[in-house]
Image (cartoon, rainbow, N blue to C red; front, top):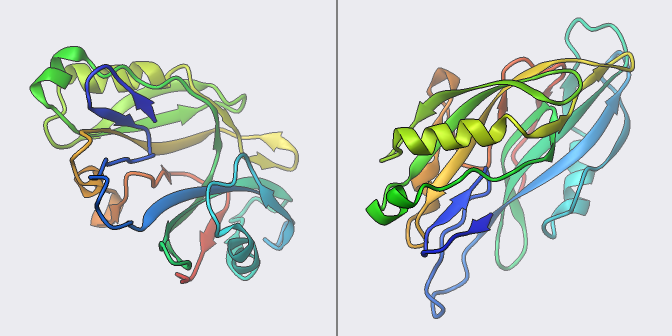
Length: 228
């Protein structure tokens, strides 16, 4: 998340909406990323957090994930993937799984520019990028898959341009890194706007939160049960 000169906020699959100081605490969405090594049958060989642990649900998530079903498809070999779990954490404790997807994990990124003209005009919304990630983790192609709200051409172009310098930790099959294609949301959101303004529609008309990233060709898929 990046604070800019005037009170508008840019979020990259990390939505933020400012609230008044006397407002009651709200449930928040957090993203947990895990490195998952699987044998050829999809059984978990190792499971560990990848990057920072953002909230209090990590221990419960780790225990729950071990009961999820991972399907390696037709690879016929051990594999390594990254599990991205979006959860909504209640103020008083407990959590709900919002989405869980497998694919490459973001390693480094430069936030897109929020064009000043669009800031002043109050333009906001979602840019969904289609990223083609090479085996070495570089983004070899980035296109605008969809845009919502009052996103301008300049905002969409800025998101696509920045993403071409992002780096990922790639999935692996039999120790070899493989390419990936994924849909990645970039949310341009004003501080008093609801995060729901940045929800987006994926394949089969399924709704996703602005934190949900959708790999289109994951080496491994996961079946999970929502938990509280």
